[in-house]
Image (cartoon, rainbow, N blue to C red; front, side):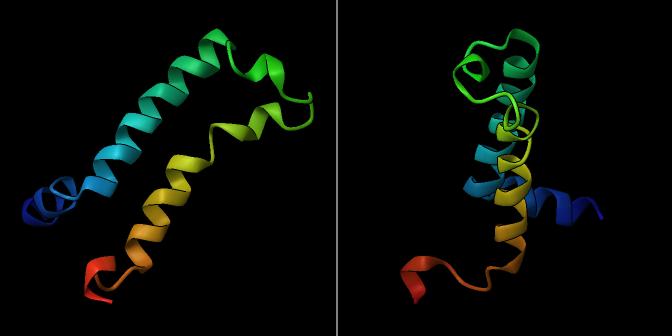
Length: 67
């Protein structure tokens, strides 16, 4: 289990997703960028993209450079 976590954390995609998650938490608490979006999109705009990045990483079999 620990080895799988180390493998995931060595991925640049996961690192970016984790940083995005932290930035998302900051944004949700401050509301700086969300003020520019229509009200109906505000709850979802920044909370979904880190999850989408991690999902895409899981379904990716090979690096883009290998394709």
